[in-house]
Structure formats: structure tokens, C-alpha cells
Amino acid sequence: MSDEKIKESVSKKQEPEPEEEKDKFEKYRKAGKAVKDVRENARKMVQPGTPIIDICERIESELLNKEVGISFPCNVSINNIAAHYTSPSDDKTLINDNDMVKIDFGTHVDGYIADTAFTVSFKPEHEKLIEASEKALEAAIEMIKPGAETRLIGEKIEETIKGYGFRPIKDLSGHLLDQYIIHSSKIIPNISIPHGTKIEEGEVYALETFATTGSGSVTEAPYAYIYSLLPLRIPLRFKGSRQVLGLVQKEFKTLPFAERWLAKKVSKAGLKLAIKELTEKGLFRAYNVLSDRKGSLVSQAEHTLIVLDSGCEVITR
Ligand code: MN
Ligand code: MN
Image (cartoon, rainbow, N blue to C red):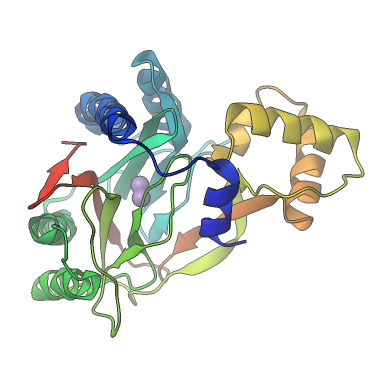
């Protein structure tokens, strides 16, 4: 199902009134402030020997302490893994001292999302790779204003990353946000593309850049620890599936959630079967772990911004 259709089914409201618009941006800012407040602490949590699951859970619990919702599970993607890794409920993986660690997390207030990411490493020789994605993000943010062309922003990102001697990841992109929709209808690519679209005032984007020592392309692993609900009506065979579906509808709506979160509420065997049925029937979308080739390293930088009349306001820094 297209993200547009999801959007329609989530929000059946008319175009918002100006007062509602203002309120919406205040909610985005509140979500952004919570992310900002946790970002620095999150960076300190990333130390060699730390279990990944501890990082996920500590960041998520700090976000909840800020009285906002969590818009997707905390991602801790290591080395050639570019995105979509969050700890499964039994994760024993520890951070290693030569790891390149991407931390990606987000909040929401009434479905208005703030999404941010940064990269940590403990080796000075990795700094250029981290700088490449950070500088590309900065350069892209500088270009954001109404009328800016996404293909030119992609070109700038590509140019900046290649200037450091690395490749941008072509199949990951910045994305338009909408209420309860993390990947809405427009993208900001990491590479130059022939046709794009134009940035419009009042839009909110999560702009994210990826630099890699690998191929510049990611492949899906045959496993996922993150899912989201697609608003379909399909009969289910197992009672456990109906229970899990009810839980997800109530707590996460169409926002991504972790298997780890459900494992705290549902028996493990039942959960496995429920996720299998719900995914096979197309009610759950699985976010498979995405990686560049073995042995490569990927860095990421991300901020969320509101497009203003002559520029943008970054709400996560
Ligand atoms: Mn993100
Ligand atoms: Mn994002």
C-alpha cells in the first residue's frame, strides 16, 4: 500500500485551519526538543563493551521521561549495517572498540514526528567518514527553502560525500513527515537523480545522509526486528495474532514498533507466530535490516526541519 493511502486512512481530516497549523508546528517543536535533550546523553552511552540492547532501552526510556511518544524503536546500526537494526528481545551483542555505530531515534507529539541520527566511532581514522555524512547534511540543510529542487539537494549531498572519497548510499533518502507517517510521499535523495520534486513551505522533513566505504547500495537481510501496521482489514486465523494486532493498533497506530517491545507483553512463542501471520497476510510491514557489503563501514547524520518562508528551522539541534 502506498504511503499516501496510509495517510488518507490515518487522517481523514480536511485541510487544517491556520490556528491548527500553528499548533501542529508547536507539537513538532516539542518532539524536537525532547530529541535534542536526549541526543548528547545518547552519545555518551555508546562505549565499547556496552550491550546494544542497553543503549536502545536507555534512550527509549529517557525519551518517555520527556513526556513524548516514541516514533520508532531506537536503531543502533553497526559498521556495514546502514539502518533498521534495533535489538531483538534476547540481543547479547556488545559494542566493539572498532565499531562504527549509528544511533537513530525519534519522538512524536500527537503523531508529529522528530527524527535524528548521529554516528560514533572510537578510532581517529574513522573521523573522515563521519565528517562526510555530517557535512553533507549541513550542506543540504543550507539549501532547504520553498522551491528548492530535491534533485539538486541530492546532487550536493553526493558531491560532498564523494569529495571525501566515499560513496553516498543511493537507496536511502531523507523523507517528508506527516502525522503518524514516518515516510510520507516525498524524498530527498542522497544522490543526483534526473527528476525530483520541489520543497514547499510548511512541509516537515527528516533529512538524512549516508556515507559508505562500500558499494553505495544496501541489501535487505532476511530478518527484521522492526515492523509497522498497514491499515487493512484481513481475517486472522490465530487468537494470538488478533491480540497482537489489537495491541499494536492501540499503542503504535501506523508508527514502527519493535518486536522487543511486544515481547514484554506477549509470550515469546505466541508472538513469533503472530508476527509471522500478520506479516504474511500483509498487515505488518517488516523493516528488514539493511546493509552495505561485508567489511564496509557506513556513517549517517540526520535532523528534522520545518520549511519556513525563506529557509528552514532545524528542530532536533
Ligand atoms: Mn532516523
Ligand atoms: Mn529518518
